[in-house]
Amino acid sequence: MHTAIRNWWPFAEFVGKYSIRRACQCMPAFIALCLLLSNAQVQAQTQTQSTNQNQSVQVLHWWMSSSEHKAVALLSGRLAQDNISWTDAVIPSGSGIGAGIVLKSRMLAGNAPEFAQLNGVIISEWADLGLLLEIDAIAAEGKWEKNLFPSVWNLIRPRQHPVAIPLGIHRINTLFYNRKVFARFELNPPASWDEFEIVARKLQAAGIIPLAQSAEPWQVATLFETLVLAESDAVFYREAFVHKTAAAFTDARFARALTRLRWLKKWMPQPLHENTWTDMTRMMADGDAAMLVMGDWAKGELNAWGIVTDGGFSCVAVPRTAAYHLYDIDTLVMLAKDASFRSAQEKIAQIALAPAMQAEYNQIKGSISVLRNLEPPKNDRCAQSSWKVFSRGSAVQVPSLAHRMATDEISKDAIIAEVMRFFSDDKIAVTDTQRRLAAISRNLPK
Ligand code: BGC
Image 1 (tube, helix red, strand yellow):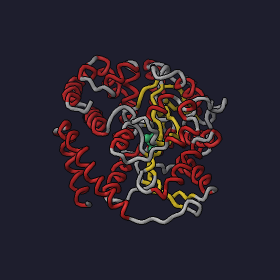
Image 2: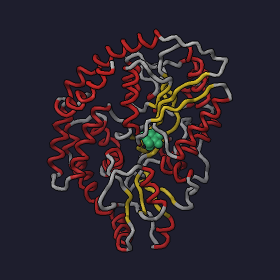
Image 3: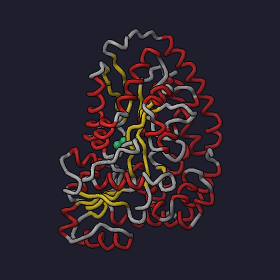
Image 4: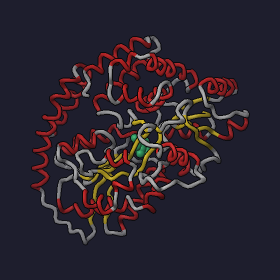
């Protein structure tokens, strides 16, 4: 089995590059076969924990910053009151790139955790393979269908059965700025790219980096998807990243987003390094950089460092995206591996969705609640604005590509790889990247 895993990843990388369609045709069957074998292995293991005694559950996730750690501690502390001990299986990787790989490997090795942070479209792929516990009774009891935002309910219920615990909704199109720096130079947060340029020029002349940015691919992709939205609208964004039509990639709006990405480079740190998102948040908080485009988990992090919202920093929507909510929904899935864990798994689902837990958890995490009627605190303008826009419904809700809401893993990685090539090499023409993306898109799973 281990050899199979070792062999599979280079294979996946290879086909990802050269024949995405073939890879997509072969891989589900290959995974299903391995999973069947590993499930048999798992079932053969005897586990004798009783639900009344202390039961330990492993949770595989990638939350390891200060705020993420606090949010996990809140959940695990509450579970301890019900004799459930949460054991962390943390895979360090902003946005969870390594975590997904480790989860698959552990499944293949017959060593699955009881819970895993599995976000977005991939939930339905895992549900199709019969790997996730269905929690219909818990959802019915908690009236999830009525209480959750409809898009959240649809996401966690791929085959008409709820299979994931939704925790919170992050907004990606968020521009953070250092209030002290802005006050010192008498600047206002930019509402357009022209205003951005005026602000950036002043800051740069004063020796301050206008925009904190890392070269990590997921962080570049987080910025880029925001730019696609800024240069177009929700319908076009979905054409590109959800439906992946070749015409969207060759469209002038897509060209503008690429050009904007390149233009923004001159306002970023030179040279760019693959810093973590917490490093970038720190750079903005310390005033070495004045602005940061990042999901609002950065707000949770700043708060965890003792920097209050509208104190040391504030946030606004990225220029030209205020009408939209580019979202990323955090979810935990329960692996359907052993019935003796079922009651603990269901308990966590109940606890996580209790309104008081939702309010506190999301305040720490920087997100908004998945419960549609749970308004964030009035004094948190970032969360208020996120909640108000998201509440307007699906027309303004835009699924994040980088954070797995828009499309499958292979498509996401293929698109991000091309955007990264373009971002890293100024000699590549906009039209070349467009042509390559259009060609790739014809072979991506639809
Ligand atoms: C997750 C967030 C997390 C962020 C940084 C996102 O993909 O949804 O919960 O805080 O990555 O790791």
